[in-house]
Image (cartoon, rainbow, N blue to C red; front, side, top):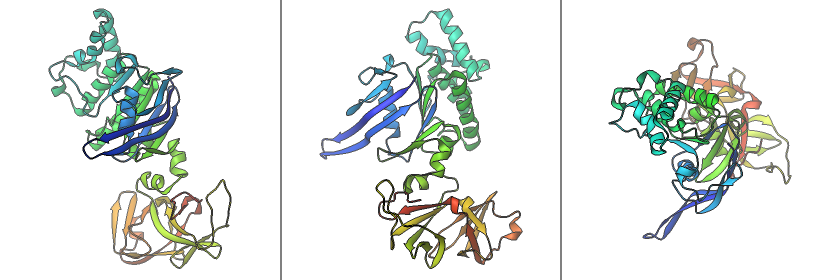
Length: 365
């Protein structure tokens, strides 16, 4: 089922302090039928509030929510046909797995035999059909999460809503469970909205991601497209593990400079449809870790304070004014090739460099 948000806004008012907070500000999104969408952003960006408004748990201050062509903005949650999975699972501790899954069907007064069949089918989808007689305390965190998903799916929802469902799991289990969520979504074909602050989670399983900041949508697109072509400095900073390296730079003499080093040529422009590039412009230069190449004749010099070795990645921690902890990915075949002190020179892959206006933080190139 397609979900459309039109000018969706939520304002929280503090009457005592006579202040207000725009948790969600004029949000416009169209979520295609059968896709998994990640709502991504830091704490306080409005992603969970957006999810609660779609679920009907919070009332919008203004705007509309459509499921296909039906306006559901004023419908109560039970009439929207949604399945909800909360961060803390919200399972009934005194009930077995089977009864937890059956609960929504019993509340809807579905006949017992039919309900039992549906509950087993939902359990089979999430691969917990052999745990039906256990109670939540007898399950691992990942198994509890699957019970919560099965309970949401048993109603055959039009839309599945997941509110940071992996945050309580350890790293390895989080990796396994997110793959399971993607598998379940593909098998069922249900439109799914997944809220997370973890960009790696969002990029790994989402068909599209929506990046939010302070209630405002910054960018929407396929994960790789948003990673490769961020619209502003916030999006570039937020996406990427290890994170992007940011340097202060300047446009002068027809080139991009970091300090006194000219790192590339650039053409000036003054157009209405693209941000301006002009002489003397202060900029930020973003370089992805995979954009660095160790080269004795490189254009950038880094003064090494110490190295942080993390498997395939190496962080070069430097107090030099031109760089602060640049991270380089897969640059050497063996660690013995990397100097431990002194200086190291880099060349850059131009296609991995991103330029941003220092004042507006909008993308220039």
